[in-house]
Image (cartoon, rainbow, N blue to C red):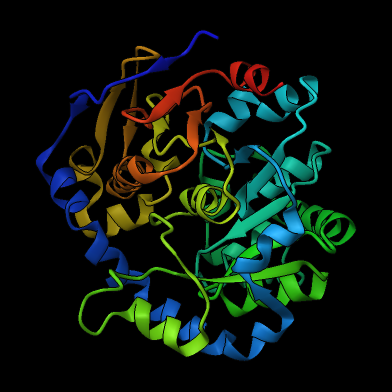
Length: 349
C-alpha cells in the first residue's frame, strides 16, 4: 500500500489577525454558543427518556474493526467517496455527520450511525429535513444556498422536501449519537422519525477546572461527556475511537479548508467575517496553507484552523489508526496516514 505518514511542517502563510483569532477560538466559541448549548441541555433534560446513554451504543452497532466517516467538506463533491465505498464493497461501518446524511441517502447508502452536535436553533434541523420550514427562514438565512456545498441545496425548498422523505423512509431505527446540546427542532425531528437515540454531553471546557460547565452538566444528567473538538466530524471520530473502539478509521470530507479558487462569499463564516472586519479586510481573516502531500494550496478561516489544530492534538492519544482519505484540505501531520480511500479499503479487505 502506497501511503504517506507525514511529519508536521511549517506550510502556513499566516497573517497576524487570523493567528490571533485561532489562539482565542476556544473562548470565542463558548462566548458565541456556550449559553445556547447550556439552555438546550436544560431543555432536553425531559427528552432523555426517548433515548439512552451513548455508553450503550456498542450494543446497537455490534463488533467491527474498520469505519469510514462521511463528513460534508467541499472535497465530497469532487471525490465522491460513496462511489468508491460501493465499488469496493466495504463491509465495515459507515458513519455520517448530520451534514453528510443527505449525500449518503441520495446515493443509496444508509449509514450505520449518524452524529450531530451543533446547537443552532433552526439550521441543523435542515440536514434532517425540516417539516416546519418557513418562507421567512429561507429569506433571512443564506447559509445553505451561499456555501460551496452540494448544488442541490441552492433549491432549498425542493431539497428540504426530498430530505423529509429520505429521512422518513430510511432513518427509523437508525442509531444517532445525539448531543444534549442539540436544538429543540433537531431533537423533536429525530424523535418524530423514530431514530435510535444515544445521548452524550459535549465538553464545554476542561472538566477539572473550578466551576466547570462540563462537570455541572454531567452531574445534572449523569451522561458521558465527549470531547468534540469543536465540530461534528471530530465528534464522530472521537465516538468511533473512544466509545466504539474502532481499530482503523478513514476520514472523508475532512477538509477544514476551502479550495484556493473558492470565493470568500462561499465560505461558512463569510457573513460573520464581513460584519466584524469589513469586506476590505478579509485577506487578513483567512490563512493559506500548503498541503505538501498533494502539493496544493488551500485556504482556511480561524474556526476551521482551530478544528484542525485540535484534531492534531487529539489524535496523539487515540487508540485507533487514523487515515485521512479526504484527498484535499489541510488535515495532515503526525499520527495521521494521508492516503486515497481506495488504499484504505484495500487494506481493510
